[in-house]
Image (cartoon, rainbow, N blue to C red; front, side, top):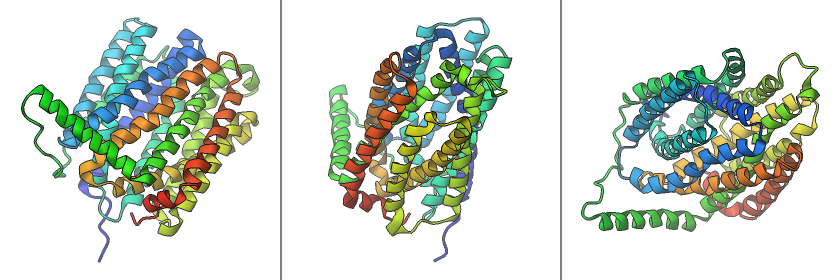
Length: 419
């Protein structure tokens, strides 16, 4: 039987819409980080700002999951993009008028975290339906490439931020990107089959129905030992990812160390971090062309998990040229990890349970992010950034052994599948 094409109308539309919004987000998120660091001068307040975004992303997915298993995920996706467009345009107007408030930005970050928390589950649950059967590895390698290409906007964000005297214009660009993405997403033709009537009756009966469906999602991930082990590993892994947010403060706090380079420390970091993007682009192209044999997918993922933590833990101890090499290797390996995991999990979980699973999975993962940002932000006030990053990556190497190696038979059931 001839394999169906990946590039259907719907897949093409979601690809274009996603890329537009990802580029806008890359511009505004980098500028927002610089804005907070410049005005506060505190690594702890910077990490607290990250937590204000991560906390709702941890809580909202698990609450949204049961709801998104009943309603149109497509409508939720484009509605949230329209809402994001309005939110970023309002922030543009406020900053353009000279407004700045750290507490106000915390509230803005919290609001965008709520939006993103729901959006992530809706998108992750809807996207697999737009990939033709037998094309999951290719489909997720394409999305990984979109994320990587959008990362190339970071150096541009650094330049525009300093040349245009702030972040306002970048928020306007992001507002337009969300508006364009939503307009594309409205035209998707896929007919969703998971939709059912929302529970009727009293508020109490609706709550009991919600609670029952939420517990069904919890029971599902508990009964699937492989999925649970993957979630627990990524919870610990996200702790190390939180520590990597100290890379930018490290460059800014040690600008004299990089004075021999003909760019600012912030620009140098954004250039170096884009070697990660280059690596991910190459890795994604390989993933698109080269099919990893089913029986080797877990072995490849296990090697990648260990190697990534070795690279991340040692990166800031290296001279700048070797940092570029390390960033590149980290990107090439990272996109391989993402493609294997996402294609395997999203094809493994039934569509009518996918939103609940994704919500609980996101909550478990972001527990690591929130715990990491709070503890690491406090530690960064008294300990060197690069030693904190090294220590957290050693911790994650322990999780590679505990969850992936010792639980390998269960994880293989998820990873070693035809997708």
